Amino acid sequence: MANFRSAFYKKIGYHGTESDHVRFALKELLEHDPVDLARLGLLCEVYGCPPAHRTQVWTLLLRLGCEVTAGVQYCEEQRREHFDDLWEATRVLCPQLHHRETSAGLGQGDAGGGEGSAQIATSKDERETMAHIFVAMYRLYHPDRLQFDPWGKAEEAAMHHRAMTLYHVGKTPIDQFWLFAGFSYRLDTIHSGKAMRYFKLVLMLLKLEARPLHTALHSLHRESARAVADAWFTRYFVGTLPSQSVGRLLDLLIADSVTMLCAVGLSLAVTFADEIPKFRDESRLAEFLIKPHKFRSDCDWGRVFEGAIQFRKQHLVHIERAVSEGDESFVR
Image 1 (cartoon, rainbow, N blue to C red):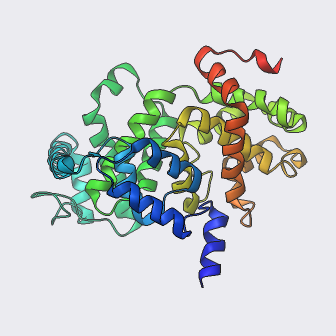
Image 2: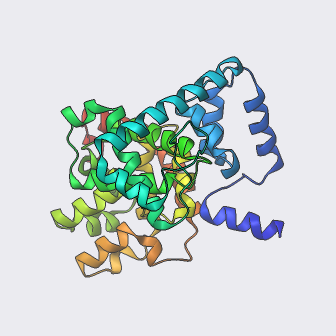
């Protein structure tokens, strides 16, 4: 059983999480007061965070909690109070969502908060409803995003998709919302509106790594290229990678999302170097790039993450320069 479990974890990208030394290192880091966030982030990047510890670890790395033991309870109380305030505000300002959550039975009971807090959603419809509510709560929590950066349809769909995915991580709706909000704010503040720029950067890097791949992806028409760029860099590969591997991806993005996003895109293309040039239909190629796991259920996704870490080290200076300055001269 242990060998089967280890093989499964390796296939979806959780290399090392079953090792005793990794569990011991994580336990030691979390027990230290204060928690060394730099070392904790490095452990997540290199080995991946065991799923059972994700809520605690991601809460710390997203600066949603306190690394000092004395402040942990206070932070938990603040998250609970803010959640309840946002939940009630959403019910008043978004009556259509209130009707949906009442119909789904999500507004009754207590899941760790005060009166009116949400119950944990169990069915797909309930999770869909909760995801819509989380997006509305996030908008209320960060109203500046609405004023200065109106979301397009792709970003709106990405927010909902991300809320659905992160709903499986937290143990309570309060944890689920704050992880969603933390990741969304960190990623969208940095990357909003840059999907095509990152996609072009991946194409440039493919000139260095695999020119046939560069030729194949460069042949995509603008609409198809935009669809792939949105799937990769607006949704942050949520839906592109199998759901079991999204947690490992977020382990990587939580440390350094700018360079790692481009590295994952580069690694994903190189992983399917044999398949991509075979596509003659542009729409089918775009479909494959958006959801490769639908075509290759046997893929070892651990290779994608290992490759991303290596490509990030190899092209770190190039990616940082291109992202910060728009300078892609290194491939010319």
